Image 1 (cartoon, helix red, strand yellow):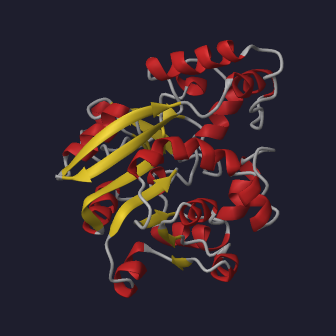
Image 2: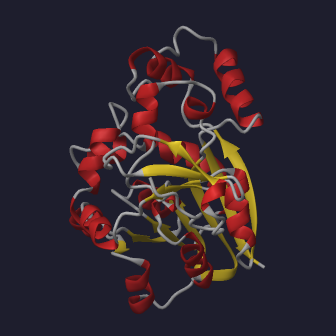
Amino acid sequence: MTQPKCRFCKAPSKNQSVRGEFVYEGNEEHKFWHCEKCDLVYIWPVPSVEAEERFYAGEFEKYMEKRSGKDRDWSGPEEHIKTNHDNVVRRWKFLEDYIKKGQDVLEIGCSSGFMLDAFRDAGLNPVGVDPSGGFEGFLEKKGHTVFKSLNELEKNYNQKFDLICHFFLLEHIRDTVNFIQQQLDLLNPDGVIIAEVPCVNDPLTSLFEIPAFEKFYWSIVHHYYFSPKSISKILDSIDCRYKIVPEQRYDLSNHLVWMQKGVPGGQGRYSHIFSQSTLESYRNDLIKSWNCDTFFLFINKK
């Protein structure tokens, strides 16, 4: 096996080790590697641009339906919106302090538009970007403006934004630095970028040994898995200010189902058994120790 250099800091192969042996939907050559210098976890070999474009243009929604378990309904756009209401509520707690009526908002990776709907209902002016096109007609009928890419938006939409957000997208992006810089260029001087990102310290892979989860977690569609240290190294290389806030999306029930059955979709299953204080204590301890599955980024211009 040829050992790579780090895809970000270029540390030599002697500083790289395999973190994820099995890559979901990958082949036997694909591995996720960990750089001991910058703490980044990255896929190697890197999938081709052409294969990536074909996937997002025609296969992404089916892929997500396969991975989502029973928590999300991908049978149609309205069903998808309904089963993502919990995501709107949870994310709003992180967004609300940065939102004012009349603001111009860009969501990158807008999917069926459940966040675009929430922004519009709150009196904001949302615009979306989504490369898949799976919900294009539906979003158009609802009056949303959606572009296929940031490059297309820049060519056809001459406006800056007060808020740019994306949720579980950064890990899919080939060139993290360029992607964030492109957003900063689209941001008003007092604007903010808010991103929800999976954290590689997820307890199901950092604390517990669950073979089924290891085969599920490391995905061919992700270029990177970030830790607070690795994302800080990346953001420190960009002319910006930032804050990182830990979050835990999945609950004790979800973790127990993974341990018992080795499948996703267990969110809330045992909530009737455990007290609310037990559930909150488990969640809060994971957040405090940074053994959590998610974090939010808040990025501003300097």
